[in-house]
Image (cartoon, rainbow over all chains, first blue to last red; front, side, top):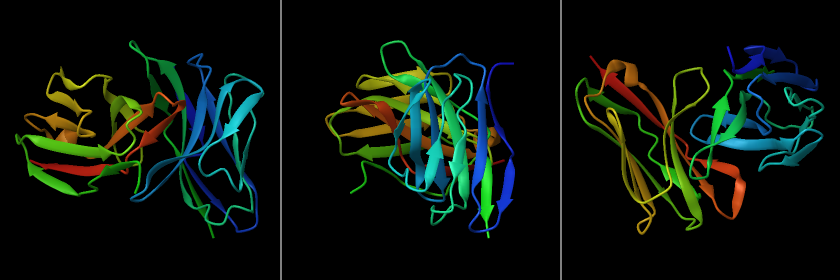
Length: 115
Length: 112
């Protein structure tokens, strides 16, 4: 089965600890993304990567870091500098659609709770 | 003003009703328009995609785009309880092709 996997589904951490969220895809997509979803705010882009060994900051990158050493993997680290880390985190990859534009395939998400 | 506005609902309708979900946007550079469906505690999945003004139909779903009014809609005919989900509109601008801008989503419940 092709798709995107995120692990774990639920993650609990103490304030002040860094935590890394896993994202793996076997769709052979070049581009990958990390979003954060909070109630009433939709999806906000944290980081994205169009190609291996390259990534760009999204709209809310502060307090987060990423790496893209392999095409299949795009892990996200939530650092202690992120002021409100409790959220639902979604990883996505994309494919180009006919006529332009592209479809994003999303993983099942990781719900992070920091106390 | 947010780039994409969407009524958050919640919207509750009886089974079989016609549902209308709407988004407005402010950036005239938006060129590609999408609707995603997100079930509770799951990732969103693409439902409809269009890049021109007018209507596009797929089964019980119709996506409508009015670029002159900066307004898009998703219509669901003969709504089913399985349609209960959050619906997110999403857009891509020709000036920033590498980013998708999502609306906040509308929560829909279809009551049997």
